[in-house]
Structures are given as structure tokens and as C-alpha cells.
Length: 535
Image (cartoon, rainbow, N blue to C red; front, side):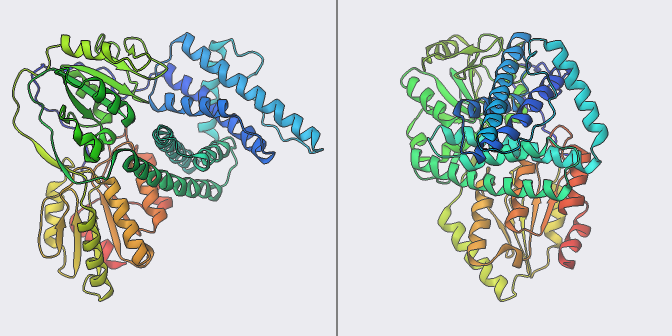
């Protein structure tokens, strides 16, 4: 058994300052609960209006932005929180009134939710917070253990879909089905007596749309920036002035690269989504896009503390950073928290000047070059070869190991697992650099997309639920729950999950995933191998 903790890395900047990096203070938690209550009620009435053919683009944007705020764990100022609550309250009043009117016009009996908040008295923020706290306690008391965890799974899917929708919007692609799925999930969360089967059905629908979003996003990025290829990227910064671009909006990375041409500033990416920009043809034309920095979004506070240049945060990445980074954190988003400078009208000069005024990287670091992306043709050839052997019964079981490369603390486990692997089984290792006759190491750091494309290719040739495939997820991140649900939806029978840190996947939620969806927890190589071969 092992936990997947991020490990510290040596820096030239001394020890970073940490203060509740991933904790949510009680006020933020109550604020998020209030926002979620409004979102759930709004979803109910918007879906009722949809039955009449009514739609409201402004409310749609407000809902997506509110969800992004929850994802970002924003510490709302009193004024900011009040403004958001007033907007959501007005949206809810408008949707409710229009629904009543349309029912009357069509001689139908309207169905109303019991209001949690008095829609006419939203100015009393203290009372809203108190009611939110009471509602949270009541909900936890009334829901069963499994209901609470299934609702957490549903909302995790909602958040991940929202992240993809925001990216897809920047490419002007349609996301209406996914948005309606988000509303369906939020609507289900209004009811205390909802059956588990209904919740599972909502999750299944959501997963299907999430998978479609992933494909749309991948296609949109290649359409905008050229074909995805396998490339080598530097993970060791070079000396010089620097800008770090983090978050999920590649169009902002492109804008920064255009603005910094010939300015003597190196640009680095941060986070898994931005990392993938290096694999796209257009981004490889910028010589000053020199590499990738840090671990990932989940480790952003540490990464930001050790980066000696200016930082652009794109979309949903607002965390408790203002007390550490005044003067060097920037955003193009409409909302800029205290201490973060708002970039206006795509004028990146303040960001560039900050980078030029900061010391940048002053010491050479040991080279660290890693492969990112994958070779499409090679993958397709290997998949055909593997399926051919599986159909001849030369391969009785296929193992896919690792969703993220370099998983911490598990090398000993998989060294032993691969030693025990029978000769009539085959392992595709995405995280462990071992190649043998029945073990293929795919040399690619980031491989969510690789796994999905590989599984889709398997599915084209033979349905996954007719193949003996086991997936071992060796590292957790904010997308783990969505990935697990996607693999189930695609037909993968055996999914093994490492023990995640509670901030990413708490033990209670992991237990529900095991009980209801059959997810297995990684235990020992001998036991886990025996479990897969016994089925």
C-alpha cells in the first residue's frame, strides 16, 4: 500500500512558505455551500424551461463561472460573495417566474422546489451563510453514507466537465449537451430521497458526455495548433528572465508567446494541460517556449513559490496565493483576487515588465529531458498486434500500468508485479521504464489522452468488455475520479487504484467507489495479480 505524495524538490530560493495549501476554511466552505444551493435550484428550473424550449445564455455563463469559483476554492471577499449571490438569486427568481408563467399559459400545474433562501432578501449575507451551514449539517444527517459519496462523485464530474467546457469555448465549439448534463446532475442533487440507481444513471450520462468533451477538445486543439506529436521537453530551467503560464487556457499561452517575441524572456508551461501544448505543431515554432516547470496544478503553491519570474494564471487556478506573490501574479480572467494583477485588453506589458524586473533563473540546473505525447502510428500497430495475440489466446490478460508517469512510492510494487507477470500475459507500462518480451514501456510523460485513444482503438476492433484488461492507476490527481468513471463506461472490467492523499480522494469516497463500482485498491503484487487472473 502506498500514498501518492508530492515530494519536495531542491530550489535556489530557500524554503517556500506554506499555509493551508489545500485546506478550506469554514467561511469558504459555507460560501461554497450557499453557491451550490443556488446552482442546484437553478438547474431544476432551467431544465423545466428547456421543456418549453426556453434558454438563457447569460444564466448559462453565470452557472459555469460559479462552478469555476468552487473549483478554484476562491476565498470570496464579502463584497464579491454578495455580488455573486445577488446575481444567482436574480437568475433563480427570473427562471422560477418564467417557468410559472409558461405553465400558466400552457394550462399545466407547476412543480416548485421548497426555497432554501428567501429570494427577496438576499442582501443579508450573514443569514445566508448561517442557513448554508444548517443546510449542510441537515444534508449530511439525512443522506446515507453512499448517497453522500455518490453526490461527491457527481459533483467531481460536474467540475471536470466544466473545466473542459471552458477550454472548448475558447475554440468556439458546441457544448450544449454537456451543459445540459451538468444541469441534470445538479437537479438530482436537490432531492434527499433520490434512489442510488437514479444517481448512478445520472453519473453514466455525465460520463458519456465527458468522454465526448475530451474528444472534442483534443480535435479542437489539433485543428487550431496542428497535429499532436511525440516530443522531448526540458524540465530543467535555463538561466534568464522567465514567465510561467499555468491553468487550462492554451489560447492565453499563445497570446503570451506572441507578446514576448524578441523581448528576451523565456516562457515555461505549468500543469498537465499546458504541458500538452508542447506536443502541438504551432507551439513548437516559438523558440522562447523553452520547457515545463514544476509538478502540477495540485502542487501550484510550491511551484509558484520557487519560480523566480512572473506568473500568468489562466482560468480556475485561483488559490490562496495573494499573501505570497504580490506583484508577480497576473490573470486575464474577469475576476482578479486581491494581490493578482488583471491583464486588460490583452496587453501583456505589465506581465513582461514584471518578468524583466525579477531576477529570473540565475543558476544552471542539471538537464532533465522527458518525452511528452505519443506516436500515433506506432501505437496503432502495437494495438493491432496485441489484439491479434489476444484473439489467438497467446495473451490471456492485458495490463495497462500508470496514468501519470513517475508515480511516487510505487516502483518497488511494480518491479515485483512485472517480475511475477506470467509469460502469457502482456503489460503496457506508462509509468515504469521496463521493456521485455511481454512488457512494453511507452515513453510518454503525459498519457491520459494516450490511454483513451488506445482503449478506443481496442474498442473499434473488439469490445472492451469482451477483453481481459486491467488498468492500474498509479498516481492520483484532480481528474482521477472522472478517469475511473470513464474507464468503467468504456467497458474496462478491472480498475486498480493507488491509495490517494485525502485532499484528492478521501477514504470514504474511495470505499464507495469500491463498493458500488467495483474499483479495487492496490494491495500486494501477488494478491492483485491473482485477482485479475481468477476472473
